[in-house]
Image (cartoon, rainbow, N blue to C red):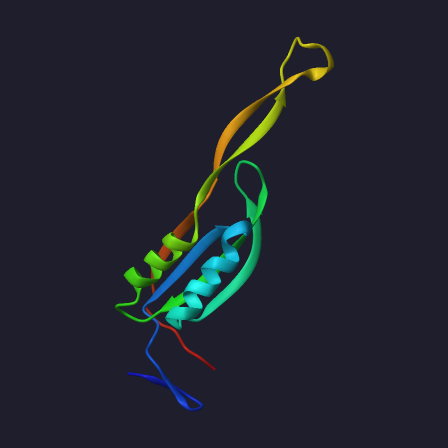
Length: 119
């Protein structure tokens, strides 16, 4: 069954994608998803090893939209190397050596939806 909302007809939601995206990639990801015409809810979030800000996108998809959506997210989110400085014990003034850490990209969770309703 299709859902009729105003003038448009919507396919039923069969998948919920939760995509955790680093702040630097959010605009690219939202733009790519808008080109696909998928609905997105954006939630500010933070976490991970460096406790950096990121955004969690909730994306409801009809059957058959999963692969295209995942590829769009993959193309718009990239990993990068950042450096973390930690003091070295035993050195005066806490001399630190930068430690390279790979951050970025997207973490994706996909959930099959048994039921969805729009009120």
